[in-house]
Image 1 (cartoon, helix red, strand yellow):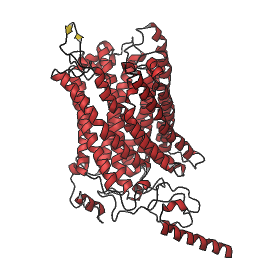
Image 2 (tube, helix red, strand yellow; image 1 turned 90 degrees about the horizontal axis):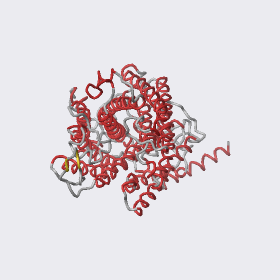
Image 3 (cartoon, helix red, strand yellow; image 1 turned 30 degrees about the vertical axis):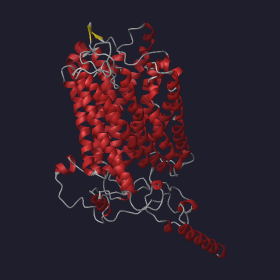
Length: 625
């Protein structure tokens, strides 16, 4: 630890650049937080594209359940003989799509990218507390991605038990093809992924607590850092519980234990397992599963806060309330998991407790939504692509969050549980909101990551196609769910009452295809701009936070000389009396006497005395003049 602190406080590049880096140490096995952030981001984008293709495949099956597509057999082989996806493989597509999006894209791709990029930058640190652990975190994640993808190339196919992998389907290898080796690979992949997240979380927390620059106390941290810090705490406390669930499931599959199995008959054969309960797995899974929602959403909320304040040219409304709401979400997220299990036959009293805590957690979430709206109100708004995605994130967070009130009520949830209403809800509030938060971060911090600007016109095109497409895909599903249409069904032509929703599936599928094609614009914009984009200036958005004080050219250590000192909070925008509409955190109050306010000094009596004397003198001079 002492060597880390010395490196952090050194006046040179922090001792990181005294040796010549090779291609391997700079781009592959890098220990520089900026390069690791890019690795997380690009890997997350690749996983997102793969997951999106899987979703298009199963949407095609739902829209045209009785149509053969010979091209599918060319690409999928035995899983689509005759040009029609097999029912078992359909469930595999749903399973891997959900797993990749929730864990690899929205968790590692979002939090791994921006925690790595912004925590050292915005706190004034040379790097993470442990650069080596940071590198390990990425490579455990990358290995998990490779194993999950490799499951498509095993003979029995990938896991097919839903992204929640409920037993007994996931615990009995001979239940269906997707319960075999593919399921084992899923478990090993998730185990490696959790190691990655725990290592990363320890690093993020240590960096926030120990490596803040001079003057950067907790109440001067941007909301981005608060969100990453609290997200890391949630992950550190909840992910190990999923490890226990995965290990016990592995034992049931391979060793003959009965943690989750009891009284089962498979293919006419009575299994010897007795005494287990699949509901135990649900408790363990959802103890992570619901905090996971906030592990995904909180970083997106933090990025959105920064982008909205910067592009509204206004201080964020209710900074302290925003921090306390994040803390409230962090605490409450651990005592609401039971609302996923109202239909398991849990004690009604316990169900009532979970229902109350679920409804209470809506309060801090609502605080954030109101504060965003108040920040936007009468702001001098700049509609950059990042700002568009930030406003879109708020839209999805509100519209998706409102439907959560229905699912959090035990009486209503029993009727719409496991229907398309649930799919619509979590794809809006968790999927779409978080993806939009991630994209707003990509557009806003792209100049800091690559030293180039993305094309704004392509950014606007990408936004509108994605925003309209997401609502067209997920909004109709609410009505399907209210009608009782169950999710994960292979075809809607099997039951007469569902046949009327085939036309809605056509609309949803075409919207998904068009929105998917819209992502091609983003991919082109992202990768082409690395080489051909307009060169970025040091602070293209006129932002106050510390990352924009670093040079455009990257080097390991971030600042070429001494790390800047912080004097003020990060949201001094459009302050009356100042000649510019932003004041960076590194500007002392002695240089902004004409715009300082009493609450700026945060209990510093000497600074307040000097300011009052200046005010008196200034007023006297004005009167005499």
